[in-house]
Image (tube, rainbow, N blue to C red; front, side, top):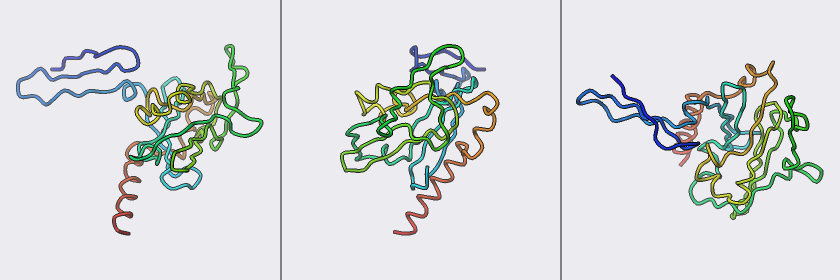
Length: 198
């Protein structure tokens, strides 16, 4: 027998599932992201080792682009100095203005389209790519003002952008992406190779 209730509200809401039988296991807490989104991963984006991205896909086709836990920006000791949505002299993702039912004005992105650049205090620079084809619905301007939330809450408040794939491509956008299990296997292989090389 299970008992369910929610903790908190809004984005941070969590569902608690507790077994009400004596001697039962501890409660299982599932985050909002885990309940409503499927996690997909792109490892070594554009051939750059460990620069992994996470794509959170909702059942309504919306994809939220975030950093995967193994990305160098999320490793200890990294400090983000600034984030820029200015991709080139003539292209800024901040100029993306979407309106109406047909999402007019949205920039169309390919899988390798750059979304933003992250500059770290150690001089390293990372370009975050869209990883999926679709229309750019929004970018997260909050990370421009408070870059630390990108590291503290990468799957929620620290997301990079929201992309809406074309309806006819919504099933095929995950081709070439890794499932959670496949991604974990990649991370384990990497750490084994690093340990063997030491």
